[in-house]
Image (cartoon, rainbow, N blue to C red; front, side, top):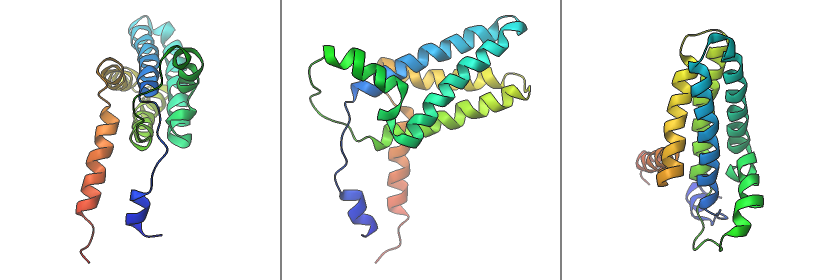
Length: 161
């Protein structure tokens, strides 16, 4: 199958409200990391543990798709049954890519924090928090936007013919 036919084949859609709820849950955990990290140094291991939970969630989403995260399970079991069906479905590839971006940022912060790099956890959690908050509150998925830009750039760099 050629590259272009792979890109045009239909992709099963997801309820776009699910990733927003997942982003809200992630933002809450990241806010906890930020608050705990700012407290006394004896509480910083708690921040690392909570950040590790966030990293694990991103790893699930990056590896198995956004629908395989624990946040998605919360959405499907507690939120979705109380809502009407979505008006339209969303391509799962951009939110899955966003999970990978979140994984890279938070895993780097976690690893650097574990080895004692000052402010690594704080910076990584702050960056991820901003992205999660923007998605949850406004539906602006920075990782999804990056995915779109990269797909467009990839299309422009193809050889002619």
